[in-house]
Amino acid sequence: MILRIASVLMMAFLSVAAVTAGDAPAPAMVPAPVVVPATPVEADSLLSDDEKWVFEPSSGRIDPFYNLTLRMKLELEIKPIGDDADVGSLPKFGDNSNWAKAQIQRVQQLILAKKWDDAIKACEVAIKQLSKDQDNEEAQQLIENFKRYRTQAEEAKTYEEAQAKFDALELKIEGILWSPDGSLAVINGEPRARAVNERVKDCVIINIDTNRVDFLFHHNRRRFEFQRYVGEDAKSSAKAAK
Image (cartoon, rainbow, N blue to C red):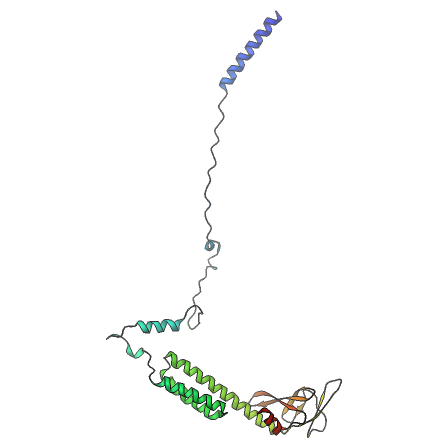
C-alpha cells in the first residue's frame, strides 16, 4: 500500500516538473554593445578664442619671416613697362655707383692716414650725392657705409682731442707706494701721494697698479680713460703708442 502511494506521488511530481519546464520563458538576448568611433580632437579646439592668435606685424615693424624689400624688388622686376607703367617710380642709379665705390676707397685711405676732417667731409659729400638715389637699394647700402665711416672718423677725432688735452696736463708718475688701505701714486706737482678716486688736476684716479696709474678724463661731455706708467711722460707715452 505504501509503495503504491509513493509511486503515485512520484509520477505526479514528474508531471508537474514537466509542465513547469515547458512554461519557463526563454532567456532574453543581450544586444552587443555599440562601439562609437572616437572623434579626433584638434589642437585649436582646446584653445580659447583669445589664445587663437595669428601674428600680424604692425606698420613699420620688421617681421624676420617676411622680406618686404625682396618683395618690392621682385615686383619691380615683373612690372610691365608700357604706356601705363610708372617709369618714374623705377629706381635709377647710373654712374653714382662706381663713383661712390671709389669714394669709399678714398675715405678708407684718409682714415688710415688719420686725416679725420678730410674723411668726415668726404663722407658728407658722398651721402649728399647718394641721397638723390636713396630709393635705390644699392644707394641705401652705400649711404649706410659712409655714415659708419663718418662716425668712425668723428670718434677717432674726439679721442685724439681728448688725448691731446690730457697730455697737456703733463702728469708724470714718480712712483707707487703700497698701503694696507690701498696703493698710493706719487705724481709730479702734487703735494702728497694720491689714492684711487682722488682728483689730480682735471682728471680722477680710477686705478693704481704696481707700475701704472689709470685716469678718468672728461672731454666734450664724454669720459675717456688714459694711462701713465711709472717714469712715463706725455712724449714717451706718444712714442710708445706709435
